[in-house]
Image 1: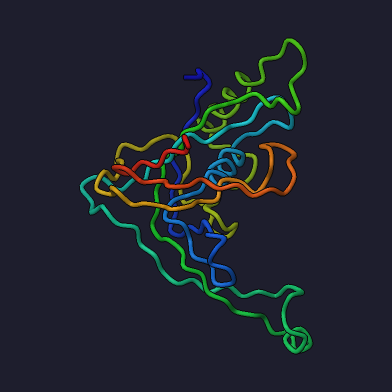
Image 2: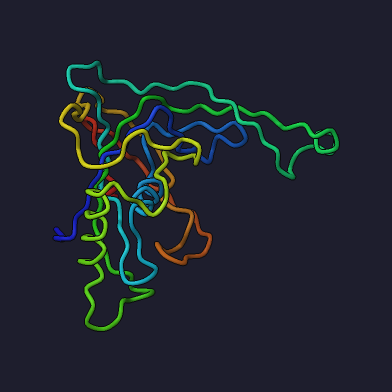
Amino acid sequence: MSKYQVQLEIAGPLAMFSRPDTGGTPVSYPVPTYSACKGIFETIAWLPRGSWISPVRVEVCKRKEGPGGSINFQQYANNYGGPNRKSAQIENGNSFQFFNQVITNVCYRIYGEVLRNEKQPSKKGQNSCHYLKDLFNRRLRQGRCFRTPCLGLSEFTASYWGKFRDQYEVDTELDGLRIAAMLKSVWSTPVDGDYSPSFLHDLQIQKGVLSFAK
């Protein structure tokens, strides 16, 4: 096990981690994807070269003494005003409305491992893994970030992010939920990659924990 480990807790009222197979009416995965977790880490700290943070696992949490064992979905409407609208909508200044299935009142604990970036190594004599770990932990303590952490969609900003809170615990009642296929990444490499989607298969949430080991 690498000594360069990082972790954080993140929570919010709404989250959306889109399943690619749901097309124009997106449905969220029940938990954040590998790439979403990587993106959350990078909102706190990242380096343009040398090292990066690879997600290891995510824990679904609930408030202590509160109900558990379920994931709550709800419908959420988006108003799209981009160039892919029908010509009449563009001419009349109307937006296109579509619906998502998002998850609500979420709390996650995400664990990651700082790895070397072989494609863009750090300068000779520098330990970029140690530096990135220290930078991440220092910003977490100070409540600082590179950009505002969000839960999937940029408008779903986190209501909390930081160290683990005592009033929350892993939802061990959430057990045996199978995910046949989950998007891992849309890029070929962790940094400066080309478009090349990859998936993880036959994942399962066991006692509130999803591992990305596969």
